[in-house]
Image 1 (cartoon, rainbow, N blue to C red):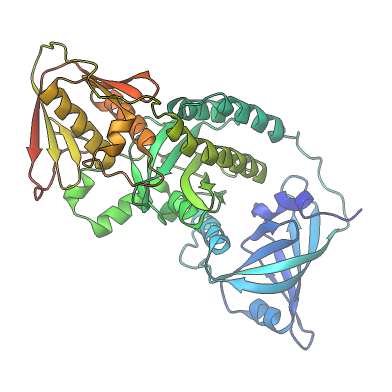
Image 2 (image 1 turned 60 degrees about the vertical axis):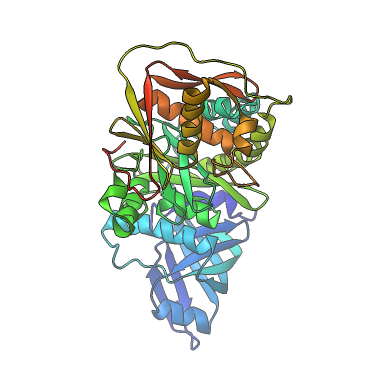
Length: 456
């Protein structure tokens, strides 16, 4: 029976380096090691082009090659007969291979040598097994298809966004055995991602951000392609990439306003999967592990399916959360509270909010909280609706693809973590209540002032 590329896909992950054999135009052979063999689809693979060496010259003169890969479990060798088609120097395939190559390079101390110049795409013409016997295979891992089915069934039962996010984290741990994960959504301006849910970290990092194109998370989002790295890649670590970018482009005062980012100190396996709906980025699902080669291609395929489900569920869920009746905003009145008066400062330049001297939140979530506490102070209101927030000109929401519901969830969870005397409580479809347990003093700082305070 012909051997399919799918059946030897585990050999392509680079646990054991592959070997490529080529010939020059006059028939002189050449053999070299490969950094990675990248699975493209059932008929194609891509090889990394790093140097203009003899292999590269041979391929351009004679577009045929034989690649030998080794099963990391059994030690069985397979030979792939390939034909060169083209070289890609940008786009999702190139960026995915670049990220994976960085993992290999940093793991072997070759970061300054392993620089991807292009992704050479080949058609797989045939696959054959080399003579010899392999080792007994280890026990087969639990089938991912059943795990995926149970995971999606659990997500489908949660119609509201907050419940969906909570169920996602539980399902990842209980069904897919993933202990460290975070979900990030695209912000209103479309230039960065912000964390709305996480699990497995000492600090949740709710509200932390990363620019598109930074780290494995930002690259996966920018290129809308999954990226799986089997070894630690320093330049693609989520938190370090964001911190480096901030140090290069911003002042120390700006760093004080950054919520600490979650992440393992030694992330040896990383997998970032974009949420894409109608060719538009919604967010990124990111998982990691301290274990080398923790995530297989089966894990990648399963999380791609989960991400597709989330991309379809998250945006419509925000529309479904809208109230069906008109609300005049008159219900719910302030109750007397006692205790120490606490200052709530608002900086108009970026809608950042400080509780006393401590930074809480900024951006859309900050603008929402400032509206709520102002209405609480001026009119005694405690109950609000999603509808009125959407039409409030002081809250910078885009007219299309608003993610108000996600920002409310982010604000709600950030208050639970950092400000227990303030809270947001759901009281019905598209309605919520502001809870205030201490007297508050609102201080609105002028547009030109620069917010400063301890890291949040």
